[in-house]
Length: 266
Image 1 (cartoon, rainbow, N blue to C red):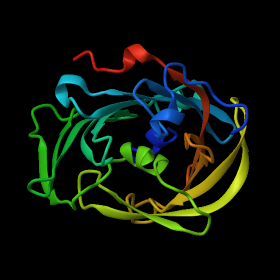
Image 2: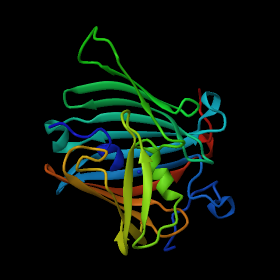
Image 3: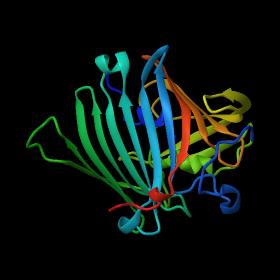
């Protein structure tokens, strides 16, 4: 079974509030800040499937004014026996414009082992892909160049872009996403305001559906639903992908903050 590379990443991505020590989101006016870490428990149907974490820091010397988010996905339990997943994605983006600058992906899914770098050159309006299949020793790296608009998101920063949006039921958000080939204009429908129960608390949440499947961002058939908290933080509380292999759900279990993680060690 070949999964779409972003699937486990997405699973990553007002009522008693979650406390983020050291970050005053009310004063900053932003839904997220460096040091935020989100932890998700992932299930496949009724089985425990693994864990996804997303940690946001300042990019440091690599790009002093940028943010870097590291997303790690690890399978667990019976799922690891059937299909082992050990992925790590790192995205760097501009916190003012929310445009992605680059993403690196280390993908280890079953028999697939790939290292990918996508750099977004906004001066030349090009997305530059360099990808190496680690299962084919000595094979040359794949290189591709594709036109991009003035601002694009990658498969990780798209979640942070959506957290900055004002949701209104019945409205649609247009999201330009590039995953190394042609940029796709992903329509994100704001469908409903619902109650969502998580290990943290029960929240009012907006249910949105990004149209990423069915020959859009991904070729395979399916649906993805995301529930964002209806407060200022716009926390992605639950992410559910419904595909032919079943339903995969990521539920937010922990929100933490470390002020020492505010800048990169590199």
